Length: 218
Image (cartoon, rainbow, N blue to C red):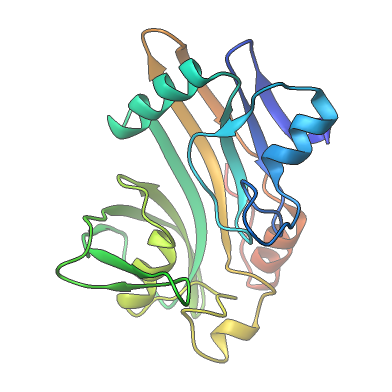
């Protein structure tokens, strides 16, 4: 599990979470990244500052103390902890743009939907590569709602490939999980310093990209 750690210092660490693992433990009792790293590294405290869906891979920041968690959460709220994703979307969402659809979560089904009375949710995107009937997108979150990227793209008619919850067949069947990877993180903080991290793109995502005629972004 040491290979998952991209960076660490006395205050926090950045991990490249594999798809299929929870960010933090829940009532299911399934394995979670924070718990696994706590046990393997002997950390007395380790808590995610933000979340990734179970089947989303990529960069996740975990605080090593309550004070660091507070500082990092403030940086996140003030958009000084910038999160950039890679996504493979159906069709062509366009060269660049912003989705600004308010979102509401239905807790019973763990489903998120667009609702004018929901919480503010803002997603910026830029196309990196045309892939025939799909496109590789670079996506930046300005807010952090559950399933935000997946729901925003699906609502706009460009659901992520492999998304069993928000995409329709055949798009939902072409990949084993939503084609989404948390690729880059940038932190700008007067207390914790300025940092930039890159989470290596997993082999399954690269394999899908190759099958679609694309190449690994740089």
